[in-house]
Image (tube, rainbow, N blue to C red; front, side):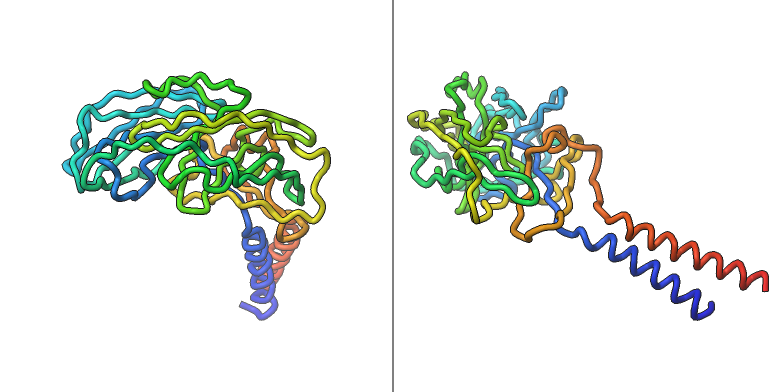
Length: 322
């Protein structure tokens, strides 16, 4: 192989590598809703329920809980709906065994989740969520906007926080059925509850500059114990975007087992602009999902690589003729 031919191939390969590696920054949205107990959770109360959400894709699904011998745990289920997802709540017929690992399957495209029980049951009512640590945002960047409010640590880790917009919830807290606006599992601090339209956030999709809504929160613990609702408070978005606003907290990027597959969100590559720009969820493609991921690449880079490969082929043919 001649030096010229090798050089052309190396150049083409370098151009392709640059194309693939340049858009490394991307945002993938997790399936909306909750999976509780959390993946690999420990010290879970033996009277826990199992909560699992699925995007509203029109089909049914069920929760399967297996004991260490692979035997299904008997129980009943109820359904809590919200605009973007449905949450099935599985109630075991009997308390789970203490200090035992269980396996949960509820999302056909995700790896099964496991959790381990603690020494016994829990019989405490969670506190009403704290609304004091709230920040209202109206910011935009290269990716789009963040409009609404974010509440930091409104409830302890392991609780599930329900959102009700404009008192539209029709929740039966005893039967764990009915409808709410959103549901969030609290993780390790800091853990956020959003009432907004923001990256991977659709809890208030109508949010826009100058818009207002009323909302309230409530907390469940893993056993289904209910805190009751907070008072309803008014949330108003400023009339104009903030100047020099700090970027909002970034959504948690899920692990591979939690990424959408049946109805995946698109992977969006970083546009030209500040590295502090945050991707926007205010795009119909985010709400609908997409059939697979998109790799963004400048067109001139692909063209250059193609020309180099073509030139390499021409040189090779000429050498064979000679």
